[in-house]
Length: 214
Length: 214
DNA sequence: TTTGACGGTATACACATGTATACACAAGGA
DNA sequence: TCCTTGTGTATACATGTGTATACCGTCAAA
Image 1 (cartoon, each protein chain N blue to C red):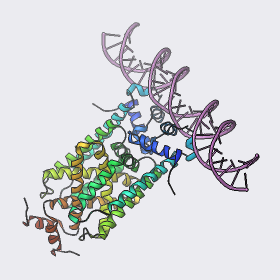
Image 2 (cartoon, helix red, strand yellow):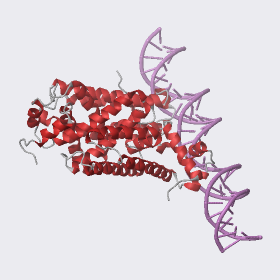
Image 3 (cartoon, helix red, strand yellow):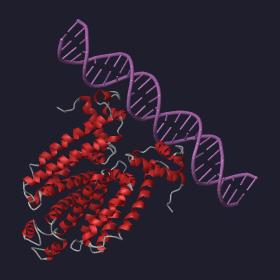
Image 4 (cartoon, rainbow over the protein chains, first blue to last red):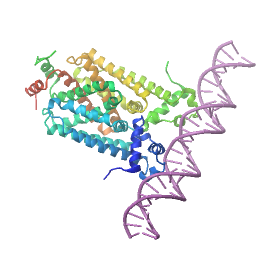
């Protein structure tokens, strides 16, 4: 298995710790890591060929973590009405509990290392696919075609990831961020329901007084 | 005026050059910059107190640039129908023409320096505000309240910024990215028109056959 | 009991970095 | 004319970095 132990684990965890304290994965030094891990600099070489390999290991470590997080998600989201609210709440709490992983993801997704970027993108797309398939399977939004659901899922995953940084760092804004995210998701899906209507159609639709319109 | 000249300008431009070649602003070194600028390392101190101050100068430099870009935007977007398409086209072309500025913005918005992050956020919010006020002034989407337009503008600015990285680096995806961005914007605004309808209302609305529904 | 791999350490080297001090030279005002 | 100010340079130092070589215990297999 890919389970980490001993010094290797110590180094990875040291890396995550350093990243949380306002560093980026790509900027970590070998000696710095060893120092933080309480090990001799050269011990690093016992476990990793170079810093790139270390980066990939860290990514693998947090990817495994995230995967289990997303899997738990599938247990929730019963009704279509409450689906987005529950999901958003859960996801943000997950990010809050894993600040290092979140920071790594955000920083390296557009960071300087093509290798890490590619790996992260794949990881995010996988999560988005899982989210989309879940939505399709449970028929949470029937009026929207599958391909569109996938597209919106990709956008949503990224949106949430970036907002997660603020969510972690600005506790007083958490409520706001959560509400904004819910609105984001709802508007995407509701807007998508109108994808093949013309602007004129929509205006007449909306103008017609329904149950309650301010 | 804030116009840069001589060595100071050389250093800032060297910074932008280095950033485009897959570096991040925060990771630049003083000697590295001087080398790229063809100057003595110590000349750096003649112009900047430290690297943080240098970063702020670079940010200011590109902010001025971006501002003029956004201002030009106000000349366009005549009809509501074509508004998003024109705007998106323009904005992406702008980012394409200024890859260094774009990369800086994306990397540092969630980067390790709180100072730069704050400055960038302010800059983005200013752009979003300008965009929102433009939309409101021109009455492009009447059915949506101003506060919501501001919110969507903030989201859109960020969305476009992140997609701009891919837009720059993956020429074969430019068409796709542009289309996706247009859909993103349209769905946000159309979805927002339905903000105060219940899920049930919307479903009945959408099911009703209008001009053309697949 | 010996062997060898594994994980960890110590020392050392070459190089890059930020910074301090001191020097050079042009332009402009007194 | 002298003096200051702005800009650029040279030298030097302490510190940090990646890496190479060599040494040391533990432990399991032969």
